[in-house]
Length: 117
Image 1: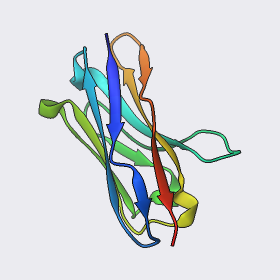
Image 2 (image 1 turned 90 degrees about the vertical axis):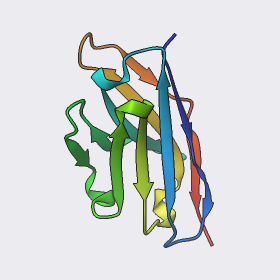
Image 3 (image 1 turned 120 degrees about the vertical axis):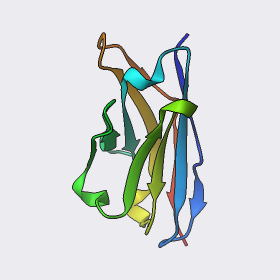
Image 4 (image 1 turned 30 degrees about the vertical axis):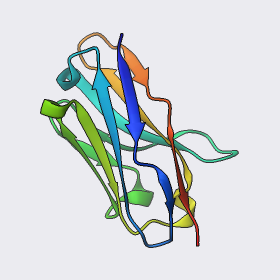
């Protein structure tokens, strides 16, 4: 059974930092393109950052220069380092794995990030 499990969310003050982690199991992690999505109340889910199986990264404009996505295939883990956090970054953050081999896709359960003073 393929699973992706997020951790690392929480409450942080504006300007602070958090690092999210997503651990995959039950599959060959390295073949997956991994993405971090977020969904704020009343808004659509949006792709925040992604990393391909080959390590190529991309970001939504609103987080460029503040967020960094990375992966460690030996640990079956993808990270999202979030710096200079703003109240508008408040959302539930979801990990997504997309198999570049067969097109299968899996979601984590989500982790809440709240940026507030």
